Length: 104
Image (cartoon, rainbow, N blue to C red; front, top):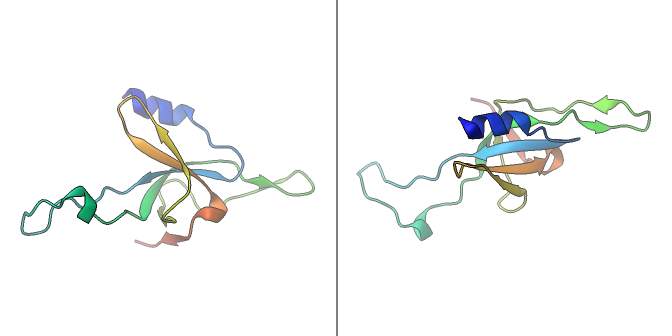
């Protein structure tokens, strides 16, 4: 509950996007547990919070093209890791670093 409140208080600035990466697959369908080295890096996540957008030359906000709840494709490297009290891990990305929005 404390982490949920902390996420609500964390407001990304400018064109920053707070993303929670999807969980890595740790078991096969047959029930075999995969070792950590064999697990593929998860390259998608869910948008948890967004900033107001970058400003143009006139000082007006340019809105972001993604919204909270969107599933996005992330780069393999990059972003700033943010951890909360209950060890939940989130990443901050610039909107331009996000590769794509996935339609479900």
